[in-house]
Image (cartoon, rainbow, N blue to C red; front, side):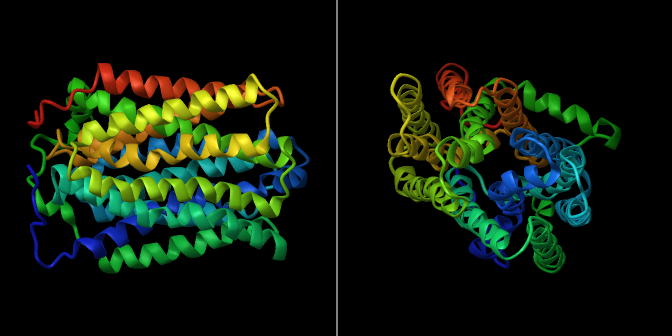
Length: 405
């Protein structure tokens, strides 16, 4: 059953733009500095892979920030958690401009990500406060397509800043963007948690609400499907500077175009979601998306490990392997969130924690087994695509649509 917006004073499109801009703090923090990783490594006098680890470090901190921030947002509200997170994000971005080693970078990226996790965890919860079912899926899709502007332009912005300045200017940009979002959230974001009944029980039991999520087997199936499909993307994001710049010798200035091609497919898949929702249920679209993603990762593995790797054969497989997240993410999220009308913050936190923690593990494993070939990357992408398909077919079952909470 779909529930309309409960307050006429809230424009769903304007709210989607605001929430998407808030979510964009994460892709800006990750994707803007990707072209700068080789330059940062040279500046620190360390290997590229030592700096690439900061992507995984960010994902771990991002997961932890959501894990802590989600339940707190259920108790004290969405706005306060977002505001605290943005302050942390701004301060740590400023400190990163002064670091002089990969170790210092990793430490500060971890804390920067905790702030980002606090900010972003309220987005899914806010949508859940206001919408159910297919309406929620449409809202998530609208937020996603707006948000995709960030990863589309972020590497280009990073490359341009490197041409005119140093890598530190990238983090100055993050300070400016974080400050802008702090002002907008403070002035414009409504407290959506007031739209639903707060979860009962004393504050000291806030962390026990995670057990309510984990006991819901079908919801966990959707959560793990989302984590697996997302890990395919995060595997690529972590190793993309090596793949394109080091392995294939692509000039740094061209990196944003190759990266942006993936985002273009994400947007196309995302826009296909609304017409598909008129004919199919969320879980059916999710199965289609994960299935196509699996075929693409199989093709990528064969193209890079059976035949001689070629940029022109690899890029199309990468585009579909990564781009299908535009179809899987909104439907997995909506299918998962339908079970938790009163603990949306906790549910969003666990969903995000598992998603980004899995992505971090993928990056760490790729880095550990890196042998200057594409084998570790393609094995990781294929493995997580298989995992996503196993979860959606054998654990997630959307036939039961009633919320258990």
